[in-house]
Image (cartoon, rainbow, N blue to C red):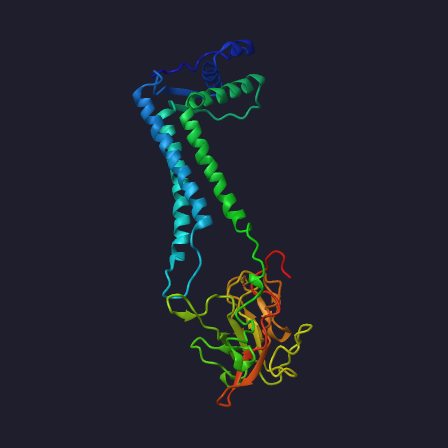
Length: 372
Ligand code: FES
């Protein structure tokens, strides 16, 4: 342990230039009101077994951090994230926890490495500093420069290649992870998959309706105009059931939840261009169907205020005016809810039932690049 005398006179510029960085740092600190009361190099003899052990502990932490970063990137690209029908292996549920776990391990071990380095390898030092606010003199600037150089030497980095390399790996991983997370989702173009829902007509599956998809409720009941009271609303779905390889059937994606609304007597809709006939009856619609997926960020926009004829999205309070074809009138959404063209057909028992005359004629949900 060395204790430094802080009562010396300020050295001249020439004298400072003659000093080693450590001497200049200590002299500068004393003049600057920083009193080093205790300074001890933990390994005065370089290359001892204890020093190597400490160095390996730091390098091991940085290596684990780098490996966790690599694991994050690999799992981000290759991990299974898709939901499947019940009965199928639901491995998608591990996706987010694994990404979170690897990210946490990466940050944790980078931090552990830095702490171990400071605790095990950096010189032990205790300083006391007086407050002052005079402008810096040229000598002060030289002292500051010397302090930085001496600080770099104290880190031991110039002679600790292993730590330098493993820390570089860990910092590289930390820098790569946000890049992969931000850019990764944009690498593959979605193609046309976002432009279609399960309401797309299918003559093979629905020959009795000319391919038009039946509209069903959550219990898979084919619904008709008598289902809703005036001013009522129901969440409906395309009646398309698909089997998976385990024999379970149901909706295979979540793109199609729809709001079926029955207007109150006397209410009239100002339809968007080309969509005047999308409701039912086509010449004077009483029933309208809109995508339930908010065009802002994809929440279910399903709070319906009968009195004001507005649909509210609970996430960020967007409001859509139903009598103007679900045009956004408040909040962050900028695009109307897409409207589903509906018709009524007669089933084999003679009852009237709703079908989708066609798919939505625009993409549902939030905006994305290259939208048609
Ligand atoms: S998701 Fe609907 S307002 Fe934001």
